Image (cartoon, rainbow, N blue to C red; front, side, top):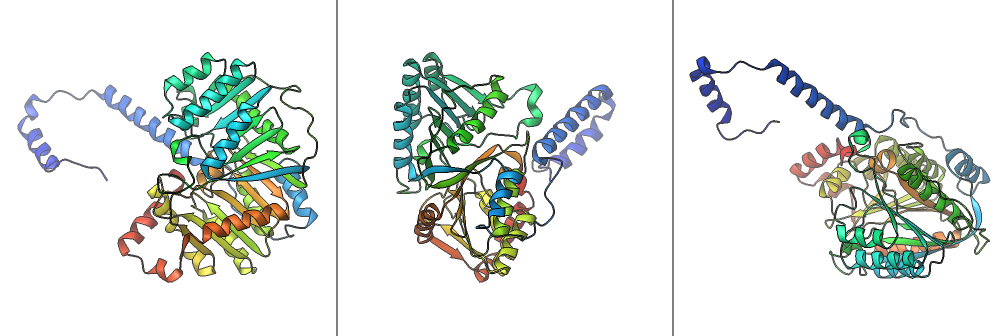
Length: 448
């Protein structure tokens, strides 16, 4: 609805009537030009938020369970890269533990560092990472940093200068240019750090003050990150290098980037990636296939939970098969209140089916984890929303290991203990104004 100044339309009509004889002739060429520009801008917005032409619109049938070898074959051959054995993944809970481990790995680098992240802001932690990366570059380590153009908007030029002057290769993903306006809404949301081709990190953490600390108050977020060793690190490296080559036109390869990796643990794993530039809906299909295969439990942590029709149907179908579905999403402490409102507007059929939905209370909940049947765990950058499934570049590590899944279930239940369950009755009896606001925002979920 257009917004006018008080009395504006009335005042405008009077002015036209009293000055008609002095009015200047309308410049039709200018009107046509303005109309064309407006049409182009509208088209650009629609292109940026429309996602790919092909969309997943049909149900995926339940054909096998998560522990069936056919499920692993489908995940490796149909969905993504092959599963590789011999990996070890360590969970890191909240900023103090996460950043200490990442910085230790960077400071110990001998040959190469590759770092791709959505958020990189200035502040003490941003400076600490810049100092560590610059130090290794000066020592002769090849350091490549890819930050998202939007996500790094709060990164001071001084930090960039410090990195570049030390020899760090720094690039920004999809900066604003006239020739890539149609890709403006395609951001890299990935969080990947690979050191010497042997140790990798992924999860939900960006480089910003809100991720520091130990989730002790609303100014310090709750999040998880993961340290990875073993053959799957080569897949992590490959995912990062794909975006690096798309951005720079340079292919990084050789033993210093892809050394021989021996087994260090007992986990099977794969590094799953998606991008609107190719395979945009593979992440969504991976989630759907895992949900459809579930027979016992699905525990989902999601910072931004805005499920579309097909994903809601899959979760409802899982409950009707007897699967216990529990979801934790942010409560009142959230950096995007419109997303929370849109999410709540979509909960009706989920709650009616028996899906258990919880809102985390102490601080912003930024975790992105799915645990299926106590066997498969998917961790990484992907949120359960249209933006992650169809618009962003995302990366998730899928781990097939009961011991790892059991540890993550314990982490999930610790978060559950600090969350408030939203019942169907409470959802139905919320204020009418909340219902109107939430259902309206839910209609525009892909734009949030």
